[in-house]
Amino acid sequence: MEASERLLIPGDHPALAGHFPGRPIVPGAVLLDHVFDFVRRSTGLRTVRLLSAKFRTPLEPDVVCGLRLARRANGAIEVTCEAAGAVVMTALLETEELT
Image 1 (tube, rainbow, N blue to C red):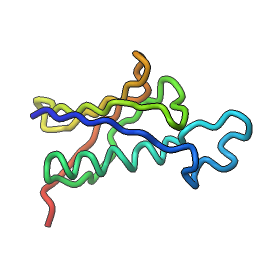
Image 2 (cartoon, one colour):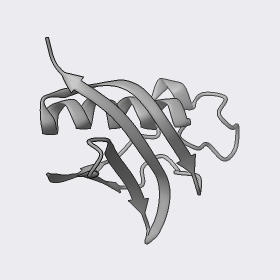
Image 3 (cartoon, one colour):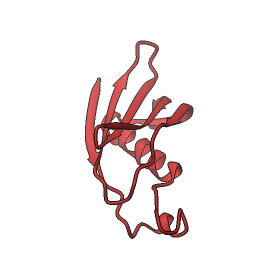
Image 4 (cartoon, rainbow, N blue to C red):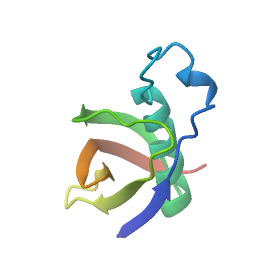
């Protein structure tokens, strides 16, 4: 199973205030919230555990990034976020059926 979508966090997002003044970046928690929602909409599964998350480069607001989802052989779901040709974040998730 694979899925993808584009994501843009607007510069006026409330979480950006103070994160960081003069050069805002999207907080990892905001990005992960979008990842969990993307997984739910794409698969019908909900995230029950974040197995790992690696933030490789900052994501600036108003920059389009791509989310890509792939299921691993062990059933875990891997999501990669890329922007401007660079990997922003990778996450490995444990999921279960929605109840």
